Length: 348
Ligand SMILES: [Zn+2]
Ligand SMILES: [Zn+2]
Image (cartoon, rainbow, N blue to C red; front, side):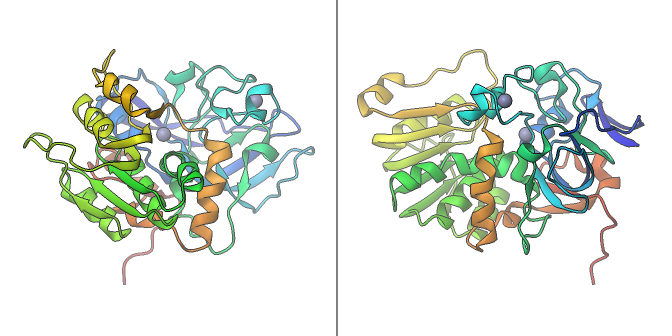
């Protein structure tokens, strides 16, 4: 089968590899229908993040089941969301919702990201994928939800959701600030989800006009971040999301967080250490969270919000291309590329 393989920054290749087969009665084999580019994929492809190749690429997908083991309840033909992290669903960590550290897999186990665990599990930009523990891993896509719109549920949509969804459930009507940037689509999904969940106010700050335009399409209020021009935190928000990935923006996020506020950093801060005004965070009594999303227990909440018509992640997507154009489109600097694995209809 065909597999998009990351070789080194600037070099992706289509490789012909053996198709995966069922290895356990609880496995399923799926065929990706749509694949979204994770925010991290752009930085791996361009060398901003140093991941050694070769490895199978792509980890956000909505797929169709083509084969299911005899102990699996999933059925061929079903459309399913595939979480990017592998997890068993029954170990102690999984039972607590910590599927990003399932005890059945090496830490960091994920599709399309071999270097995070050291183990190759295959990628979504392939003809087929093997899904272990299929009944736990796979969730049917609801009728009426466009796979192209929801393609990023596997990771980035869930990642944006976790920064505002539980927080707004705890504090209905709270105000939300998103400091956008490096984690391009994650910050935008957080803003869109906050609007959908009825936040009292959603302000999206970003120096990128293209991303601000995407946030506006989801009815968030927008303005330039403008830290280089000396912008200081002048307002306080109950819930703050930092997606910018640099120390100055994280400091601004802390300064913008109200007393007893909740701050989630969804960006990967790439330096070994990141200077932050921790004393300010202490006196404000902030709750600070960071880390990889728990994809499997999180995405169904975002999916339900999409299915009910309130949340529109498709507004973040700036480009939809055929999978045949994946190599070129992987380095598109915009916020979200979605690859269709079937022929793309020509525009009317
Ligand atoms: Zn990802
Ligand atoms: Zn587990």
